[in-house]
Image (cartoon, rainbow, N blue to C red; front, side, top):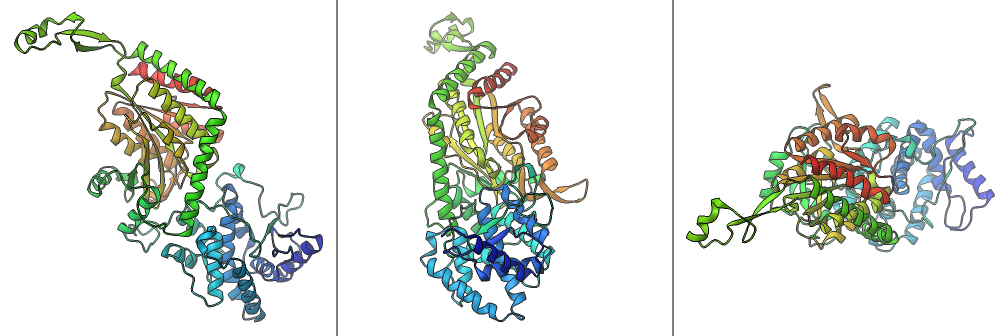
Length: 569
């Protein structure tokens, strides 16, 4: 796109003002074509949105998108919906809009007329939207068609209806909230017009010609089948949804019957109507179902490379951390684990077993002491892989690798998993199992996705750990302790369904941690979140958590936590 001149900026503002019939605000969006010229049709739409809706409420949705890395994608998708509604509202009074709209659609498709698989989601859906404008039938799969149908807002919708539809749509399809939950995390607000003394942040959007790349966010597909009145509708059957989850995250570890049995035991109470998917990340055979999935997989591949590069860039200090942590673990085991007496063919004679030597020719009639038998100890590491971790994925992957590698050097069985939630499913991905000592590198495949239903994840891992053969068990969570999931829970206090987030999510997670501890599992947390969420960590884990300011502090912090738990064992 060519540089935008001051003349074209003034021209864009005037086009917006004329459509809005209001000259008192500074536009937060402006539209230009690939030559840097003010784009008449889209600037009219921007202004008309101001006139037809209570714009501060619309602007608040745009502002909420700024807490996410893929904000440009979400902004563009919302504008498609607004354009569809405002055009139909204006057309009876402005018949010329029809030709302006069709001309713009042709210019857009002249640039984006190649197969849609080559573009990002916003480009795909925009192209399909403009094909519809020209009377053409887009060639898209059922997922993208349904998303586009829901995005094209009706002209009958008022401001409240538009805002509510946007919130529900983006929560269901992208597992994000269109509300400002953590203002201090945001970029400067998009909407600041009319507030004297405040600095205005203006967005220059290139609608169509010369449109830039838009990073793809985690595609969540559809919600589960309708189970309660408050749950969103879907056209997917249960089988289709399970197939979608398996295709996205990997083939299931367990058979359908085994998974059903697990769900009957675990998906109860606050987690009724939820589902579980256990996987080792082995790709399912089949074609990628939509353009967004192709782009998402490419993005995830790049994140894996960033994870590996981050570790290699700090290789010396990471290796030092591994050695220091391994040393502390060994010392803790030797100091605190009870001695184990094992049968042997040498050592102290065991009077109770002498007869076995004469009668059964059993040579192991001696016993010897093994101080701190580490074979009776196992450690599970569970990584929060929700979108809230997106800004720290490299660091979390490195921390998990260091802990796992140190445990491997100490010959302590270790299993590493991640969890996230999407479309009513809680997905647990196993990177390495207890005896897979050569699989630590797979931890760098950790990528954030969707939401996080912490309580159900802890409950599911608790169940897996109960079935392990080890006597002493430790669970380490790397988490920001900020549970949030789209599937709501029933509150007995208010006798209604409430969001699985904030106090409700934290209390549920704390309850599951207490159950695991009551079952003899030591649970500790490496806190990866922000200062504001420290009270959550204290409520869930009491004193058994540590915030790691930098990777070089990991060995001492985790070593102290493990030392305390091993002593308690």
